Image: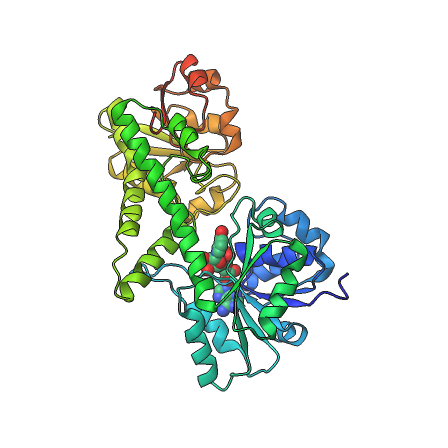
Length: 428
Ligand SMILES: NC(=O)c1ccc[n+]([C@@H]2O[C@H](COP(=O)([O-])OP(=O)(O)OC[C@H]3O[C@@H](n4cnc5c(N)ncnc54)[C@H](O)[C@@H]3O)[C@@H](O)[C@H]2O)c1
């Protein structure tokens, strides 16, 4: 099969780039991976996977003969026509997307009549048009350009790549768009082939809509708390309406991660820069920020002042099944607790190494039980499956206080209460 499949290149071997590379390698493509991070490339060449993503290591091992890693662009340009760009586009201080890594890739391209840049990175609408102008102005007009936004979720990224809800291809109708469509054909996914600007907007609008759903159910949760309704029941009753759907109606500590916060903010800024004030997104962002802080008020309700109190955070990653700490709610919580004079202890089964780079003055433990020792209160921040299976009677024996705040409505409250905990979730 590999003989007939188009060889491709992937530039940027982070969460999206590595998964894209492994996914296409699974489909039989030779994949030439390039990254500026020499340590990461060295790790990958040794067969080590620099990120935690279920199934990714096994996939890369299975397909190792078709995967090539280098810090050099030349082998990729030699072997592949389609160059998938999966570099980071983090937020700037103003909330716009930082496109410096994307521009560095564009600048590094030599003139060519047989290559295409295929943009997987999430970029503002108009980026494709501006890259086109840049390429033309620098004598690289022979380059084709395709927008192919990525919708995978960390934690189930490879599965999402192989079974996408849809594939979006934005192009000008030339060979490169056809080749990208052909590449994805074995996945038999719904195809949205459209213009470049619309493809760019589909990605931003989809993430903004999902973030809106989260902030909406969080506000409903807050009203439930004030009125005596149970948001879990409300979300179930709402979600069964097919026009609404059950996904992303999970109340909690707000959204984090490398995508939602930055993409919502980038869309809001993009609208503002284009002369339109996107009121709804302003509220979505504000609700999300306030939601992370509501746990502090819950703790104060039970503990009074937090000065000198020990609070244990169970889970630090922005969600389960990832080691990604970008914009994790735990970062805001730990900082707020410390500012209020609390001592913060923490446990995460996977993300501790990343967390240590970002959190200071936090005591890390090797297990949930150890982290709970001597704590006045516990806060479930990430819905790691192992927390659902905790022996709460055993946990109660080692804590000083019996306050359990479930920031993800994930723990069996009755079990925790039977073990002597005062249990409080979100919105119920
Ligand atoms: N992480 C997700 O869940 C997700 C999902 C969909 C879309 N996206 C988008 O995909 C893009 C990549 O996200 P990510 O989470 O994989 O980022 P990441 O930070 O994990 O990886 C980016 C990689 O690009 C490399 N890089 C930077 N500049 C480079 C250059 N000039 N040449 C080669 N490599 C370079 C970095 O060293 C890094 O390894 C972003 O635009 C993001 O918004 C991410």
